[in-house]
Length: 571
Image (cartoon, rainbow, N blue to C red; front, side, top):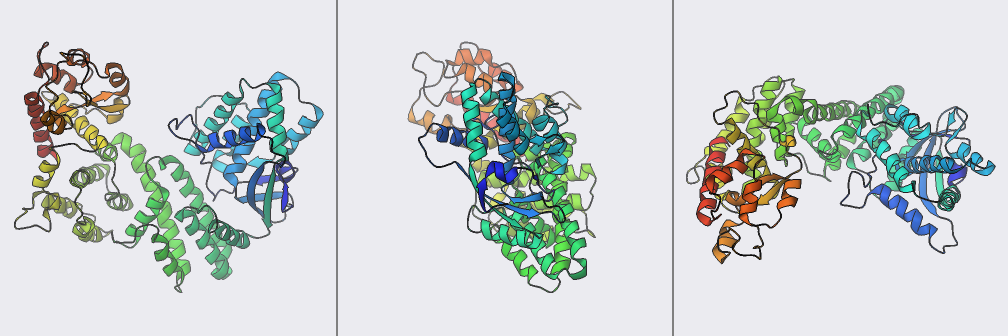
């Protein structure tokens, strides 16, 4: 490979592979993130901006780092730049498909297709092994068009990206397609090729410390592999294979949980579980802790055991956020609450010690109380210092969760006067925090739990409603925050007391679907009241106020007290 080249020259007659221990495809599309600019959106808009400009220089795609595969002159692992390269291949595949629908490729375009995509059975680019057959079927061969059987989030991203480009190209004329093809095939890039993995890892660390920084997890992987190359001796190849295999599984787990949790947070939780302490440092200092271990003589033992722990923790969380969240309501409830960072090291230990599912659910239910109070009360006191002792004592030889539950109960019931160190999250503080406005996601969660409470009245053995069964749940202000213009509107007088004390409180909040919320808008109360039918709390509003009644301060206060009483009894 030449140091300065074009995209077509870089790929031509080569086989480029994303190794399995590297991150799978991670770029988002506007299809899944309509409210913000995404990687693929930027990719396409940058190309179109260049196309419409008067630029004399060629388009530039940046730098790519490759490792030549041993004994294979024209096969390379892409070490840095795989996200851009994957997107280029997906875009070109969609472009060639559209162009072929208009007419047959001419000789030059046929050569370009063979150089960049496929010549006979030789496919130029392969992604990670567990996504590659899907990549071939959906993107290269285009023999698959349905979305069934997509096992990983990265596979779903590949499909969405191809669909996005196909949709964007669907109405483009031939001139646009040939122009974009010409831009990409002739676009410049720089490459660096190394012969061995150790040099590739050094280059990866060097480049990314001077550009866009990789995640801490990626740095840890590179540091581990580099240290094994330096100190592995006779065991080097065996250890490298093990690290590669474990990171292949780690990245597959990431693909299933990344919408729930950040990978560097999982690295931090792994450190806390590995060293049995909630006081393990926060990012970015997590790397400092690992770097110190890599200076010790037993560094190889640490690399092997910590990589195993990383793999386990990612697997546990993929089960927790995946199949167990579907099977166990307590787990579903804790995940729905969100903001559960303080709870996750306990959860990981519960999986590590193979506790039965009902015990995990019981632990989640108790931790849910703690997380809720932590989110509502907002004290500056350190919760970690109050629960680190029971976390440290929760070990393979002592799997009993009772001390954890007892500690949380003590924190809930501690008296402010005599047990002030424990009392920052007690019942008194909780009740105070429920009086006024609160974070909307927490308010939605509380109203969902209140809905379950209402549904269970007189229904023994009732199966509680899952949060995700409510279509796009939103928080509705029954009395709108902006007073409707027409009078009479059916709400109390919008005086200072009403606006400051009653508009933003649990008594005036209602759980509602997005479509319902959009439909009713800022309408008079009588119209809203008539539309409140989907949930038990909707029908409760109808019971609280007669048809021609007013949604006033007294009713809001009465409803707020009722909801707070439920929360205090159950949390």
